[in-house]
Image (tube, rainbow, N blue to C red; front, top):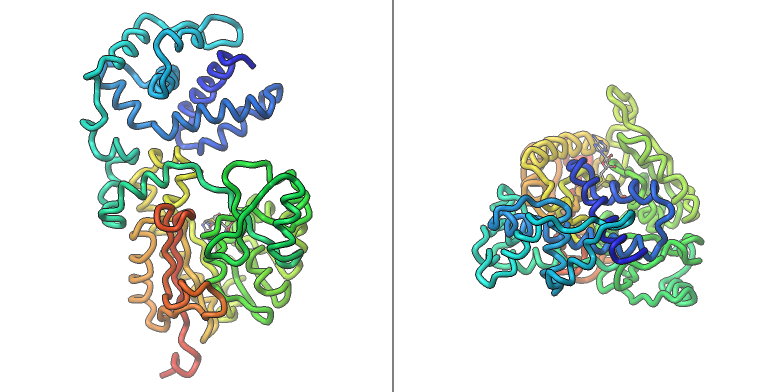
Length: 436
Ligand SMILES: C[S@@+](CC[C@H](N)C(=O)[O-])C[C@H]1O[C@@H](n2cnc3c(N)ncnc32)[C@H](O)[C@@H]1O
């Protein structure tokens, strides 16, 4: 594709995203490229780079355009980002040309707006409101200020950078060194992660899924933070374990590994397609101690299994504010009503899952959110409602030394180089203590 054709495709993709503002950008992009199979891998990557860069500068560019009286159209968003990266108006006009696979020439109004933005005094970003500069919705600012205080700007800058690509070595298939060597044979040079003993890290988007190590189930794509959540659960080979919000089984696979493929895991979810997505991954990883169960309203399943699990993981649906490095569009799409709805759901799920924990058993509540309302506040309220539970530190053998002394895991991109994660380990009082 010519540079102009890539620009045109990026503008088309941004237009498709604009048309479905509640749909995650990567889902729109997948559908867009599926319908245009003629676009090759290199062009696809180049188009995605343009689009994801625009998504990472969404509010700031809109604010600058507003200052010069222009609407933030996909064309102007792309053009402004090109200029911010050093293109002159002249250079830009060479990309915006007429033609079947080109975006069309800049209109007089577009040129006028862009010209105004090149003036030295035009809309300096220092004048923009803080939430605009930080690329977050206005309502979210106080929540993030409360969580991060003085480190807020550094954290949000870390969340704006592209994530590393973390892998979990599946010890059912081989050890970390074997996985490193296998990846190296495919030209992928991974380093061990600092905290997770099963983790390997690659510098960015790389074609891991076509490597032999991935196809053979020796590695799985999983952020280091997710791996640590599983370590906090401390599931062992003889246990009955429930993964209550299992989705497509990312953590189920890691739990099965810590159980050496023994004992029994039930992977539950309310979404059939997600649970179905686990089947292939379980097979690839060589896992065979997992039963899947679809939760439906009025299900008697949970009642019959009350107080029967040694370990219960609640990987709750959440705002995903810890994953903005991967999903920059979510950063500005999140609405206050989403947070309200999710905190109600999390509370209900916690109470339902708690009823399934054996006396003396443990429950780990986890989110990939950095907001107190979904994390510590949920735990405080849960403990107030459920006096039979208390916070307990994970067993030292299960977690890295730095995490051993605390019942709470709290990770952030700025502090730890992982996604933002929260996990709390809760123990249900043993039977005798419950009766007292
Ligand atoms: C954070 S995702 C889970 C990710 C998964 N554990 C993993 O590691 O890949 C949260 C999951 O909770 C599920 N969920 C939503 N409401 C639920 C409910 N009431 N009960 C159980 N699961 C629910 C969603 O379908 C979603 O798959």
